[in-house]
Image 1: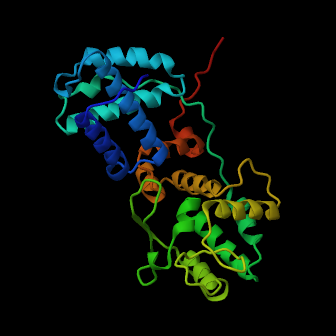
Image 2: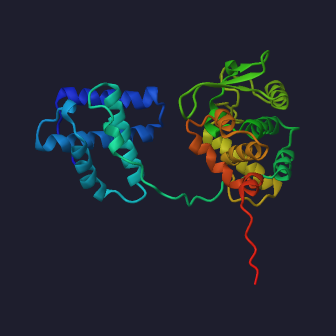
Image 3: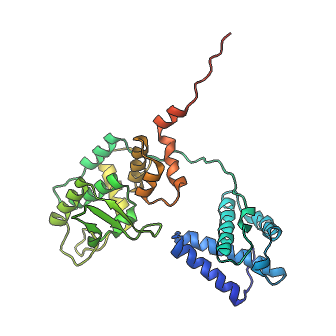
Length: 306
């Protein structure tokens, strides 16, 4: 893959694509950086032989580039690389800069999933973990409020850390999440027990401070909690409960919420909306642990008679 200086028009197209990935698609910063790098390499390679006219871009040219560039990609990187080029071609089509349907020449790379089923807590383990928190202390009331919210709503550690006082509508019983991984705000119902735990912390646990974040550190000078500190308190709670778990971070609750909902019959769409997944494929990973569903679709093994 090579990069050469581009004319201002093509450079403007790349910058518009980067803005689209970040502000329209709401992709993570690392994903946007990869998408822009791959798009720049694509454009630079096609410009190396002759000036690139996007309106005359052809399927053979796209496939020729892919054949050369893919030799530098590992089997783990290749699916994302092809997907990135396809997304760039789709963006060019939406901007009416290339022929219609050009992105369809790139087919997805088939790769069987070898990921193990997500780890999750049983109901007994979840109750054991929550009861291990000493709610007689200010720090314990804070930790319990966070843990209960994780257990009921499956929020990410970063989403918990960034919740502000004004994000809670106490009259409507809702919680607004503005700064999410997908950069798409969403409103969630605030369960009654979670609301009560938050009120207990705000009244008898949160130190006096002008900070707007709901959850703050217990240091002499309060400061907003970080995603790492949220995961850290989960890990400490797991240790206090005496649980032996393969994972001790806040994501353990996220997997638990998704698993419990799916096993109770909730649709992937409903779970995806709650967890803020942009793609159903992300949520579908939890079907691996839906034993009732798997049992229902399993075919009977034919008997062999001698």
